[in-house]
Figure 1 (tube, rainbow, N blue to C red):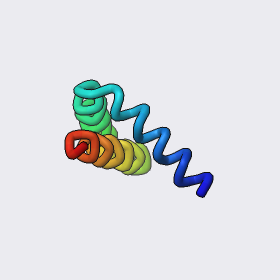
Figure 2: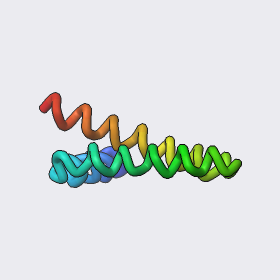
Figure 3: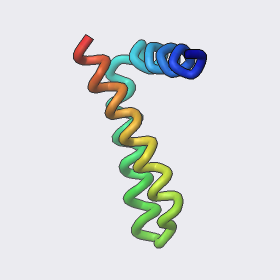
Figure 4: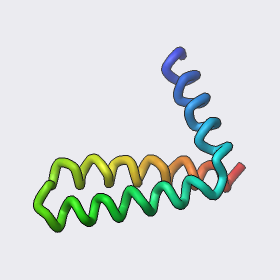
Length: 64
């Protein structure tokens, strides 16, 4: 229950950012592409995970 509350509060805080989430997500994607191109696959995976998380939060925010 505690984890769910923390997740909800985090999601709510990110949702308050509004359109800034889209910009942050696209920045993460650009960093991931650059990391992939230079062969830093671990960094690329980390950035893609962040990108997916931001896009998911943005999707749920738009649904509310």
